[in-house]
Length: 450
Image: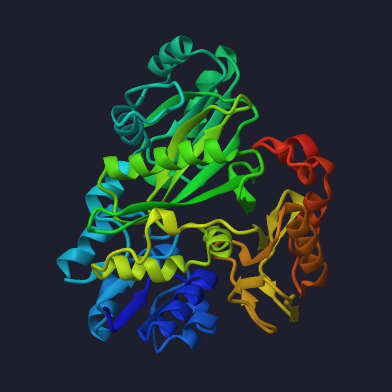
């Protein structure tokens, strides 16, 4: 087992990893930018090293500085968390060259599954259902239009190297296709330095369902059930829950088996998710694979009583999974709300600044993953997420009631947040009755959809 791990991240996920390491008796190294000098993860880690100025490109995305910090402190492994370098194949490869374990899959697999066109082809060969779409990437808008006509409108235009909702546009017909393609391609070039695009037939009003996968280097692969991530704004998740209220035990078994088959088809190792679209007729289609821990992993931990970060570390150290598929039991229902420093009434404008007062909710089966505290200044340079509020109860209605109670107790003063907006979502009749899809926000909050 590793004796020292460097966390190549910041915020609540860095704190989450540090706590898991402490419980395992592993020393930790935090890295931080000049903007994060007073951040909580720098105080909790055994060591902390400044790796550059505030901009991510000069700190949390600077591979050389992060690897230098790992070598200088004698860290044997690097946990990338999510975002930043977590799905960067070059960084994973460089870790290997420096004899530092990368806590995640190997570079070749990250590259293969990170390219959405290649991932679709691989899944098709493995017998995993995919949304009808293009088989090769496109660089030219007119050539893509010809393919779109064959696929049939409406179509989703997606960046091959995309993620997080970037480089995506919905085209309802030929009249808006060329402009949407060009806009998506420009966004892809800016965000991923890759102009390759692909097309998928648009599935109307689907649910976004992801299955959590754990796989070790000894050939053992299990799934930990599903998460419903359908409540989104512009492809950015706002609220997640497990299990999905629309999935029967029979469908769960089929989707879970498909997710495991998909992971085995690529020789996957470590934690990851297989993402599906579930249509209104209960047909499911592979969408993409995320080769990292997810923001919403706590809801799976809540209903399985498993520590996913701990399992990640054990797998990266070469150990076998500590349980088999038949040992995985889903108990109760869990919900996670992402609390962001943003103002929903002003088009979700980010609201960095100093937090003057914080009161975090508590009680049975209430969890808060955060790195904020009273007096903390939220930097303007990074993602706006402040904390994740997670609750678990015996069933979905009880979990909804508990989350509303917890949100009502949560206080963050000094900056704007989306606490009230999350509370409003939980009060919508359609949400309470389980009538949700990825179009939930535009349908119920049209004034906030753009």
